[in-house]
Image (tube, rainbow, N blue to C red; front, side, top):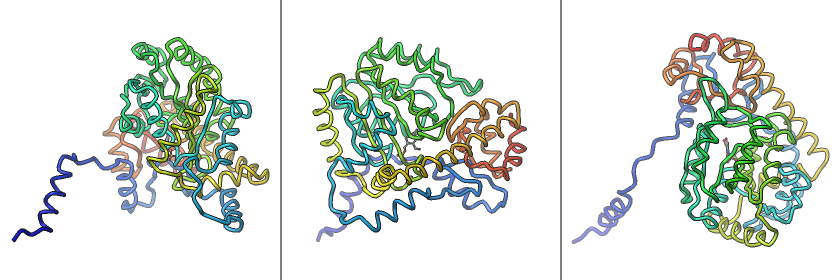
Length: 402
Ligand SMILES: Cc1ncc(COP(=O)(O)O)c(C=O)c1O
């Protein structure tokens, strides 16, 4: 007699037989290695979360206060709908886009699960609207960028952006590569605090990129994941706003996970600007239909926290004050690193949580094995993982490799 259970099992195994094994996430592997390292003086510069001087990633004061309010006042956890928390998206639009753009009838926005969800939703929308479009992505970039767009069916194409050896943005190379872009292609840009390089485009460089987009009919898709962690809330959003003002179509993927310290709560938003106000309703309708088929509704708690903070002057002011403390800490550490060695001077002028050290893979491995200094395989360090206490060990360990 046939053993039905074993037939089913075989069929199921064959059914997934075509799947190729996937390499484990390198940064997550680094967390485990760091955890299992017993050296007291080990330094974690790997994972991209803010750390205070004690090496902790605290819950922000305003977040704790907002959670207490929600605990007291929230009366229902019933469904909200695919657009999520409408008040959240409206209040956050002022922070991200500024008051004027936030009220533009050409711009629509919805809550998403984190910045990743915003990027994916934008990618899906682009595939519907412009099925043949390529997305141009600078190198290096956040490793998740290309997979997000490729999984949504867009063709990802790389352009040069940053030269590690000279620690400079190579704008000429970027513009040369973009000559191959077609009308209706999309250009992914980091709005501020570039991950992994920390390199900031100058006003003139942003203008050149805007001009290329205008002349060639390229649509900018801005990833703004670190607003307020570079130079200030308005300063860090300046370039995104300028692109929206200068160009007919634009997208902005936003994350509150770093600047509100809400990482695991998955808080983000996507704004899309169309050429004319008549396109806004179809854009919104398609965003919501896509959201409904992917996550149905975004998770509520983190967005409710952000709304609660932005609704109240006292909490908003305290959030801005603590964000400034975080930013000042990162920028103070940048100055300390920059002054520690001529080969690290470039880090002082960069912004955000990350920098790429001009060292090769062997140096990265030997720093980990011999000094207990952990960083991503490409030499990216999380500046916030440094402190006044570990700075001299970091510089002493690194110096022979520079
Ligand atoms: C450049 C960039 N974009 C987007 C994200 C995604 O952020 P979230 O955790 O909100 O999905 C990150 C997170 O590391 C990032 O570095």
